Every structure is written in C-alpha cells, then in structure tokens.
Amino acid sequence: MSRLGTESAFEVLARARALEAQGKKIIHLEIGEPDCDTPAHIGQAAVEALQAGFTHYVPAPGLPETREAVASWLSRSGRMETTPDRVIITPGAKPIMWFLMLATCQEGDEVIYPDPGFPMYESIARFVGATPVPLPLREENQFRPDPEELASLVTPRTRLLVLNSPHNPCGSVLSAADCEAIAEIAIKNDLLVLSDEVYWAIRYGGDHVSLLDIEGMAERTVLLDGWSKTFAMTGWRLGFGVFPPALIEPVSRLVINSVSCTSAFSQRAAIAALTGPWEPVEQMIAEFARRRDVIVAGLNAIDGITCAAPGGAFYAFPSVKSFGLPSKRIEEHLLNHAGVAALSGTAFGRFGEGYLRFSYANSVQAIREALDAVAAVLPELEA
Ligand SMILES: Cc1ncc(COP(=O)(O)O)c(C=O)c1O
Image (cartoon, rainbow, N blue to C red):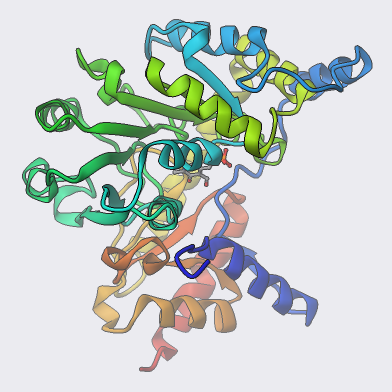
C-alpha cells in the first residue's frame, strides 16, 4: 500500500468541507468535474432502462449495443475507425489505466508519464511494481512534451508511454507535429501508448489531434475516454477503452476479477448520450470558454501571477513562481485566508512546483469572487 498514491483534489475538498462545517464560505475551484447537470435525455434513458429490466449482470466487456455505439461514435466524430470487439466499457475511465497497467507492466518495466499530470498514472505504475519515469511538461514549451527529451527517457525497459491531451492540469493540447514526432519514437522503440483523451470534447478552437491519427499507431495505442467530462456524468461511472486485439482478453479477465461488469442501465444511458443531441455538450463548452476568458484575464491582472490561455479541458495553470514560495504553501494560504480551494501544482508531480491549478468548472460570478479574494490575500503571503 505504501506504493499507492492518491488524488489531492479529494483531500483539499475534504479540508474545504471541514472549513465549511465551521461556517466558512469556500469557493470550490479544486475538483475537476463539470458543474452542469447531465443532459435530461440521458437521465431519461437510464430511467427507461431501469424500467425495462436492465438491472442484471451483463457481459464483462460491455453490452454489445454500447460497444457498437462507441465504435460508431468514434467513426462519426472522425477520431478512429474501430470495431466493437476492440471496445471495453468500464465504471469510469480510471479503470482503463488501472487494468492496462495491471495487464502489461511489472517489476523492471518503466512507464513514462507526463509531469505535471493526472496523479493516478504514477501511482498505478508504482503500485504494479513498475518504475514511473516523469516526462516534464514545461511552460516554455506550452506544457507539451519535448520529443527530444522523450527520446532521451526511453530505455530498453520502457513498456508504456502515457499521454494526455487535452491535458489535466495544464490545459495544453498536442499539435499534429507533436503526434508525429512522438509516434516515430513509439514505433522505433516498440512502445505501447496510453492516450488519455477524456477531455477530447472540451477544446477551445482547433481540431483534436491524436496519436491515433498516425498510421501504425492503432496497433500499439490504447484510447481512454468516457462519459464523465463530455456529458457531465462523473457520478455515473462510465468510461471506455479501445484496445489492440491482444489486450481484449486479459483486460476482460481483469474486469471479471474486479467489478464483473459496468452497470447495465448506465450503459443504456451511455448509448443515449452518444446518439442524442449534441447541443447540451456545445452549450457546456461555450460556457467553459466564457469562464476561461474570465479566469485567465483575472489571473493575469493579479500582481505576481501569469497565466497562459488553456487550449482545452477546464483548468487554468498559472505560474506563482514570483512569490518564491512552495506552491503548497500558497494553496493553503488561499484556502485558509481567501476561502478559495485550488490545488498546488505539485499535486500533479514535482514539475508542477511554482504553479497552481484552478478548475473553472464554477460560475463566472464565483470565479470573479475567487479572483478578488485571491488578489486581496496574496500581498499578506509570508514565507
Ligand atoms: C486526465 C484524466 N483522465 C482520466 C480521468 C478519470 O475519469 P473518470 O472520472 O471517468 O474515471 C480524469 C478525471 O479527473 C482525468 O482528469
């Protein structure tokens, strides 16, 4: 257990809730989930499925019609051509990383993952006995991986390369040239790749590009995505992976050994999400774009903070290096004195030092209040 990490967002949330219990007002900019409701037609489909008896075990890799719906959605949205037998449905997207690393990585293997990055990559890699190798994402490079640096980290022991675009926490997106350069390295070194595209839909201009666009990558890439962010369905626990054929049987066996299957009526609602109207998703993204503009402008207006505009996801990742203090210390100061819950960049790895993550999955009004409160308490910050 000592090898297993955690997600600090949940810990900061717990501290914020404790302060709220004492009567303090807290603005929540720590947790990464859309604040809007799941679109009504999706909920309706779940109710209908419950009433129609989708209340039993279903096949471990997913309902055939849900796997089919995922494959045709991926094709319709121009992301990839695949077949339903390559799709596995899981309770949330997180189990895809968990099952993939359990199935493929062991003692002696190295897993390259983005740092800053979603903390579970490192945690799970370490837990399965592999050695996590951070791939630094630097602000000078718009928080995108530097292919030369990546190449220098690959060794004969590298088993898996994890990428995430749009990126949590940096909001960065890979370019087509990045994908080409990274694919070349992956092919040359025979690497398996996990492409975490859970924020696929949440982009601010520009097409989504993926390693999967590149010839020869589908055989070595696992696509991770799901319903949590795109359809505001975090609490439903619905995710999927598209795997190279050889991984379908082992990952299905891991599903059988752990959760048996993903909730049957949820999987019916999942189809409604993929085949139903797209307007609710577009409205949510338009609202995120508005908030992004407010928070980025507001952060840049605060003395000592600089913030680049994120290209996707719903996180601002400003630099607070000018204060010369550990980010964790600033996170605590903002929570205790401004009533603003944000995360230290170090919650996402050591290369996150000097940064904070603000989730802007909150109203414009709450964001404005938070910005005012942050601006007011930063001058009081002492070492
Ligand atoms: C980069 C990234 N991948 C995966 C996930 C997990 O998604 P889910 O809630 O569907 O398990 C998250 C959730 O925050 C995330 O930020």
